[in-house]
Image: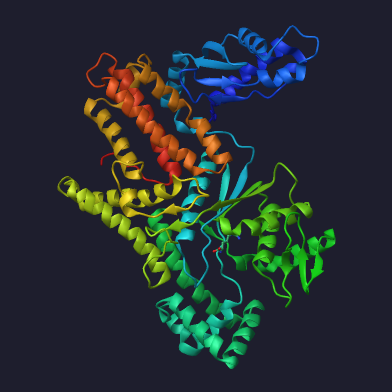
Length: 587
Ligand code: ARG
């Protein structure tokens, strides 16, 4: 099938602007149009802000223009006739304000109804990307930081996938390292029949980890055995490998409980996967001449950091950075991805900055452009007391699951209070509780700028009146119910008519809808999910304004207005999908 993709409004306006720049200024008009949506609708819908810049280059030269305002005026006069722009005006020193034609806005919406939201996908300059996210550590606690990484990473991956880029959703699990020697020896000691009882041997891996650490610190003989065990594991000894696998599986199953609830899909390629690639990757760096000896370690110095990136530790062993070097090499050369996004807390900023700079020194990455790596950092999760959020004492992984389960059960209680248990089957009630509960946790995380800390509060995230998933899910379900109540099918409506925008609130909603594509483009290029949350919230406000001032069912404009409701529902649904939230048709 022929794949249709429509330009964004910004792109369409840029085309017109570019043409007019040429006609107006010839060679001087060869600049990239600066097109942006107007913050204040009283001025217009979009602004083109090039006249001042152009003026500063041609000022003093032999031209017909005496100031930037005259340039702007001339540009607007030379706008090609497209039926797209209704009016233009020049404000201040030379801002060009553009008002789009309502017929054009309606046409875009009718295209959406006809061809679907995928035709609105922004175009990105890459074909394949990696989002490295979640990435908890085996036998250690999967904490709220990993939950944030999971939620933010999933949203970014969803947005990039929507842009028709192939995304490798990577779980860079911490499944390698010296702690395994200790764990394995302790397993042998505590469960001589470990091979038979397998995963069942250890109920709580985190507690097991703590016990083995105590043993490790207290007993020299045990410590020596544990260190030997690391060597055996790393050299591929079958028995040690088997024990390691058992330990990994226990954690893996626990991580999966979180992913299943959140419906997040990830592909595990843990640290151990890259281990065989480390020596070669380091040799390549050595051949490039960027490795240095420092304090007995083998390191790479990079700009802006006093301490270097450690490629080989003093004892000859490999570390977190060695693995990330090998993983980066693998991703660039074997998987041939053009964009790699690492989602961790901001605390790892320095590590990634050094890693990326080292890769640039090695010429694995260009100074600018693609392939490109980016670190997506996020702040802490705080509790009501303003301190680092801690789940109840107990076992690590179960705790995150408990947290999610609490969100669900609170949502269920609220739904029952609204009497939904009378109308719905237990399965529907359960599905709704999941959608609302998990959706609330995700939205509360995503709506803030990711770099800031955020306070985890069930009361806030489940508030039906706030800027919450619950509020938005209700708004969506309400639109669906408006359409249902009309008794008409969407196909029927589409056959009978099309969207026509007459009332100002109707037009404002329409304009906001057709801006969806460029909002996603901004959110995905700046890697800021909160941009999309803000849009979704404002969209529902725009809808409310429209619905308050325009009668839908039973009005002469009924067909057009129901179709506008449908267009709103389509865009809202796509927002939910990108945010990882499951919308409900009834709530
Ligand atoms: N396991 C690490 C942690 O829990 C995160 C790994 C992030 N990804 C990477 N390629 N370094 O902090």
